[in-house]
Image (cartoon, rainbow, N blue to C red; front, side, top):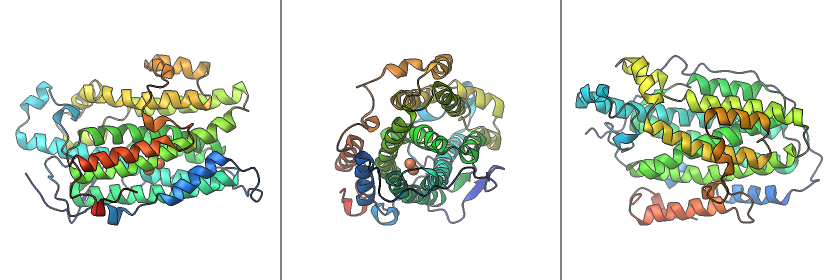
Length: 373
Ligand SMILES: [Fe+2]
Ligand SMILES: [Fe+2]
């Protein structure tokens, strides 16, 4: 096992640092303090009150084993259990575990920075002031998430990958689109739920205390972000025409396909060079990816239904993906997806989960001060 902090992280893949997209849209000045939405203002209050400092809250001195940085079981390695995996010497398997952690966390990091950019656009383009208030707290949240994932990757894993092309393309669509709600749909419904699905897997299966704590705190914020997206879009989409809704459904579906099929670490497999095409094929049919998809769509599909985007176009597309059944989910949804409560249940649940994670010892010694507010 190798325990050390990294001083010079290795940056991999051609896409690193080279992503750019033109901004579309119109900056809107909202009429002063008119049209209050109480639900949004409550979220804004919580957004202000529940800020945390990753530099203080997390114990960055925690040693991390670079042979398996997140302490994940091999069942989460896409090629594990295959004849190719069986042929690999232990040293190479350790490299796969490390790069899987690096690629996965890099895409979470890249998603966080792209969310930061997308939400900053929403502050400018969303029409009402309450939503601008709330989105401004989310800007700080996403900056903090970018900071903590970046620090974890650079100090504890030591390998960073650039933006995977499907994620870059999804955000290019979000940012170039002139209609403000597309940013909300892309960031708050698609990317936030992708993040929640990944964080939930990490939090349940990782055994590295710093990663568990980091994911738990980030998830707490993301539950609030998903709630905001649902409140905002539900209100706006109820007045759109069938043709306008169909356009949104097309857009969301395109994002769903990108998250479903093209999130298998292509750059990583090409970099590791064990036969990239075979590895990508194994990844696509792996149990680990199936489980990620299940968790992803059990969040995205009910969220689309909730905001009014489960029309004919969406239903046809989701049926083709084999995930339309998740649209029937109601009470069985993860707590972090419930948004229609007065007290923001998702956040409370996330906090309870953090507290219990701390008390069962998984995060002992990791959360500085252990002061879960
Ligand atoms: Fe985030
Ligand atoms: Fe977020």
